[in-house]
Amino acid sequence: METRDGADAKSALARTSFQEGFARKTPKIALGTYPTLLEPLTQLSRGGCSLWVKRDDQTSLLYGGNKVRKLEYLLAEARRRGATRLVTIGAVGSHHVLATTLFGAREGFTVEAALVPQPRTDHAAQVVRAGLARGLHAMPARGYLGVAMRVIPRALAKDAYFVTVGGSNLVGSLGYVAAAHELAKQVHNGDMPEPDLVVVALGSGGTVAGLTAGFETAGLRTRVLGVTVAEPPWMIAWRARRLARACMKRVRGTPPRGWLDARLAIDGRWLGRGYGHATEAGDAATRAAAPCGLTLDPTYTAKTFAAALDRVNAFAEAGGPPKTVLYWHTLSSAPLAPLLAGAPGEDAIDPKVRRLLA
Image 1: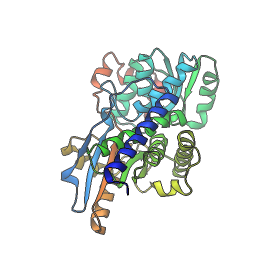
Image 2 (image 1 turned 45 degrees about the vertical axis):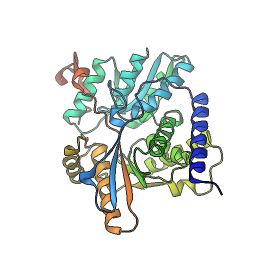
Image 3 (image 1 turned 90 degrees about the vertical axis):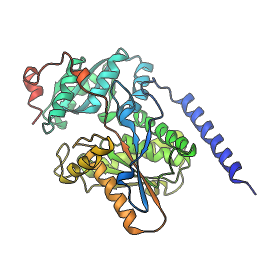
């Protein structure tokens, strides 16, 4: 009979083998610092359910958040193809567009982005100003239907590499396959209990997809709850599931039957009026997170943290064996002030861009 120590050793060997093979087959440009921290949120845990946070807000001192892991693989692919320009899409206050601008420029790329409207907040205005200060070439569009006319001709040029919304294509999503294996190693090292559920924002789908496939290949029992923060919800869900299947095909081949339904659930109850609009539940979650040292934004993380608190309460009230919920924090905690040095004031922004802050 195999001992527990023997099983753990075999599991560790399998993880090491997978990670080494993944690294050989999937080149990346190192942008972040890993592993990111795990912290217990004891003041928000309840009897029978503990709440933890994965601090992907600290992936980089330049600009953190979940885009960093994706860009490591996307920029490597752009360089492999000989591109000198990155062309992407996002809302006018998009963290993805800012991260692509910052890290793309650092690696020698010029960055162009078609921008679409989103509700105005001071944070969104600061994000677009920071991007413009760091060399972003903004192409304003009235909506996603108008983006194609601005993006397609530029993205098809030989010197360009197209970075899809949120960096969520197969290449970018692989960053979160690697992140899932990072968490598995932390769990096996005793940094936290194995999570029953990881709660993470579901916008463009790449983070959710990568984690879902990553936990399956890492051998964790952990399930993923993607919290819908963008529209239309049916398309967001379809995209996440398609990307998860693509990630599994890339790293594992033929997955076991029914694996995706067993791994991934999607919760659309927290969207409110739509993308970028604050909700009462999100505002309450923001107040609850502040004493824990977590800063949330109304677009993504406030709604997601509200869902995480709801899951903790539901597990606690259901009774049964103790549960562990991990909230994956995807908003950069790097200060924007240094990035705003030399940035144009909001009144000095191109009026066509400024009008996108509706």
